[in-house]
Every structure is written in C-alpha cells, then in structure tokens.
Length: 475
Ligand code: HEC
Image (cartoon, rainbow, N blue to C red; front, side, top):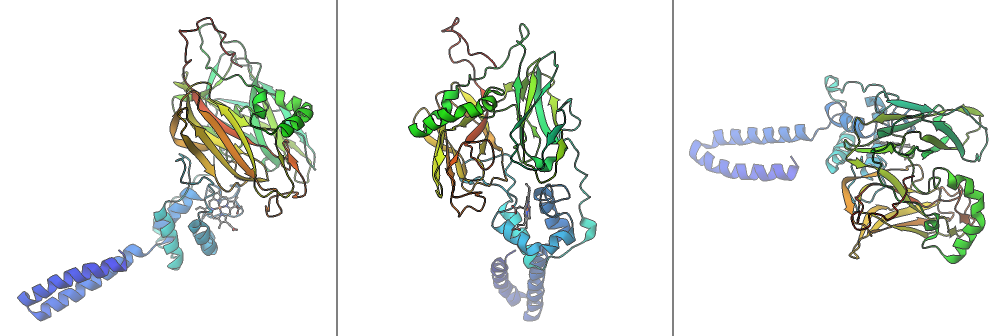
C-alpha cells in the first residue's frame, strides 16, 4: 500500500474514530486509533519489502537465466543471490531502461508471442529490491535449481541429420560452405520442431538449411502450394543504376543463388538465426520435408583464430499426421542497393505482393553490421497501411524471429513492404569501415536486406474457373 493511500485510509478511519470516541470515551478510542495506525503502517511495510528468495529470484529465473548462466551466451551468470547482488545496480538500470532482456520491437506495433519483456510490475519490483538494499530473504523460499539445459529443446528428435566434418581455417573471411545431406526418406514427413546444433558454435555465424531434389509426390498424397520464385523480384523498387550494378555482379553469386532455389533470398527450410533456440510450431502447423529430399546446409563460419573441425546437426520432430496449416517460409529481399560511405540513414526497400490469401505467422528482419532500423508494412488491398513490425534500433547480435501473438490473415493482393535504414557513418560503433561504399554481399562487412516471413497459404483462389490452367509447380 502506498503511503498516500495509508494516509487516506487513516484519515477516514480517524474520522470514524472521533465519532466512536464520543460514544465510548476518549481513552479507549485513542488507544484503538493508535494501534490501528501502527498496524496499517506495519502491513504497508511488509507488502512493500521485496526479497530475493520468494520475490525477484523468479523474475531473473524466468527472464534472464536462460542466457545468463554457464554456456548460455551472456558474459556472466545471474543464477544465484550473490551473482545478482554483485551487479544489482547495473541490473536495476538495464531493467529500468528495458535494455534487458534483449527485445527490439517497438511495442506500439504488433503483439508478439515470444516477447520476453518484463511487465511494468516486475520492473517496479526489481527497482524496489535494489533500492531497499537487496534483501536476501528466507532461503527456504528459494526456487529449486533449474535442471541442466538438455541438448535438444524438443526432447529426443525423431531424426538427426549430420554433416560431414568441415575443415574451417583459423582466419576469415570464409566463403559460405554448402554441405549436402541426403535424407533417404521414402515418404513425405511433416516437421513440427527443428533445432540446429554445431560442434563449434563459437565460429558459426549462421546456418540456413534448404531442400533440394524432392521426389514427386506419391499418387493421392497432396502437397501444399508454394509460390514460384522470380529472381527478378530482387530488383523490384531499386534504382536503375543499382539494378545495373547487380546485373554486372550477379555471376559472382550465381552458385549461392542456385542453392535451394534462392540461396536464402527466398526463405529456407530451417535456420539457426532464431536467437540460438530451436523452433517448434503449435499443434496443427508443420513444415513439409518431402520424400527423397537432400538437405543443403549453408554454413557461414566466422573464425576466431584457431583452425577447427566442425560438424553441424539438424534435429527434427515429426508430426503424427499432416497438419491443418502447412507452414511456408519466404522472404522479401533486394540485392540492388549501394550504401554511400558515411551515410547516416540510407534507406533500402523491398516489396512483394501476396499471390494468395495468407495467414501471417512470423517476421524476421535480416541485415548486417550497418543495419540501423527495419520495418515490415502491409499495404492492404483497400489501401490501408499497417506497420506489422517496427525495429527502431537494429542490433546485429539479436537476429530475432517475431512470432505474432495472433496470426494475421492477409488477403491476396496485399503488398508486403520492408523498409530498412543503414548507418554507414563513423557514429555506428558496429561499422567495420565508414569510408567504404557498401553493396549486397554474403559476408558481414557487406550488407543484406531480407525480410523473412512465415505464412500458411490459403486455397487456390479460382480452382473451379480454370481447371486446366497450369498450376505453379511445387519445388
Ligand atoms: C537472450 C539472451 C539474454 C537474456 C534473456 C538476458 N540477457 Fe543480459 N545480456 C546478454 C548478453 C549477450 C549480454 C552482453 C552483450 C550486451 O550487453 O548486449 C548481456 C548483458 C547484460 C548486462 C550488462 C550490460 C552492460 O551494460 O554491461 C546486464 C546487467 C544484463 N545483461 C542483465 C540482464 C537481466 C537482468 C536480464 C533479465 C531481466 C537479462 N540480462 C536477460 C544476454 C541476455
């Protein structure tokens, strides 16, 4: 109870007490009033006091310890009273400013299922705990130790596909490596959870996995529709001189583009660019892994000074039955842009019109070190514009998948747009070279502009009207 509330309650009660005193005699009334005020004040203090055990330990456990523990990726652990107490002041600051847990979406646009942000009440609790002297509290109320993190978040996978060992040199940059692993699956499978693990995570910048060589579907087994990719869409909306520059350069990237039909500029089957976590889809949603498929692992190694042998594994959990809503991962991307040296806020746009009704499941911006901000916008067929996701302050280290709390139906003809700003000035602390003009490229000191999105496609809009029309091929 706040002190102003206590005062208010005390005033109302003392008013009543005055009447009581008149009825019952001064002395008794005075004693009653005094003891009541003491009790109220005491109760107020007890409710305000915040301890580690029984109070804020739970907040740190639920929102911080996943990263702030041995092997969790953060520079120090926050999994004990002493560890948290040692950094309490800094913790109070990063929590108050919402710097931690890391989350870059502007809360004014969209609500996301995986938003780890602390509730205002929890922030206030941490503040009171720090200001109140970081009380330990009763150790009997400590949470049981969290179990060690299992290797696979999904539990034991139904299938694990492992690459051959890759020899990674001590120094970079290393061109993307492509390692093919045949699945030898005789039937289509539906995948409801994926996770990518490496034997040397410290040198793996990212892994994208694509599907090649899918067998034709067995008779009577339906396959979900997917849009045909048009590489020319990479130039949509670009300046003519940038488009020409790309056309002159693209031979260089031909090999990368061919992999899995777009080389990551057209979505992927699985990715490690998800905050290091595995992904699992809710019941009724799954991704197709067609019979006969070969998995292509695109691996970007960023060496740290020692030569390494590295293996990568993909773990999968299969759904028991075909899903109601097959998932497809696609992207908006452009390759035709030049970011001038020193530019503080250079804008690059990509766009695509949805060829069918779609249920939007998630969004994932991708840029490199000069990224500054990123927005996904839906231009509805009726002209209304809606910001689906706004990331005002890009952080290269946090490549996050933003999962919509409520999947959003978008009618066919909706134009998806992505707007990115790049900061190529010396004021960007991540900028490797502000004196350089930056073009599309695969390495982190070059740039990318990709807006990945995951959807469930709607039914064929006119199946009855054009029964003999050529249907887009399923890759
Ligand atoms: C997704 C992983 C992750 C989560 C969740 C997370 N952190 Fe962090 N935290 C990091 C990493 C990585 C760093 C170091 C790099 C940086 O500062 O961005 C860090 C840095 C910090 C720092 C040092 C900041 C500085 O300026 O030196 C503090 C304090 C901190 N975290 C507290 C917290 C607290 C408190 C929570 C929970 C409310 C939390 N973190 C949740 C990953 C995480």
